[in-house]
Image 1 (tube, rainbow, N blue to C red):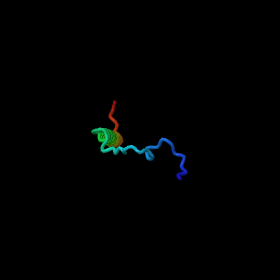
Image 2: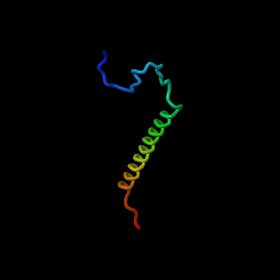
Image 3: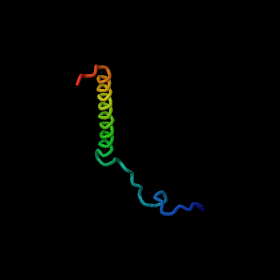
Image 4: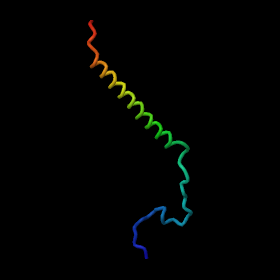
Length: 64
């Protein structure tokens, strides 16, 4: 005799099990691509900011 108190679980139903064969087409791929593109853009902006700061620090101040 089973002593578990699990009710309504899919593991104990007598019907056929359903296997998920794949996700929505491209959903995770698009999310991963968007995240990767964000990191690349932020990295490029950080490098450009460092270059601008280095140029500003190394060049003599322009006479106004």
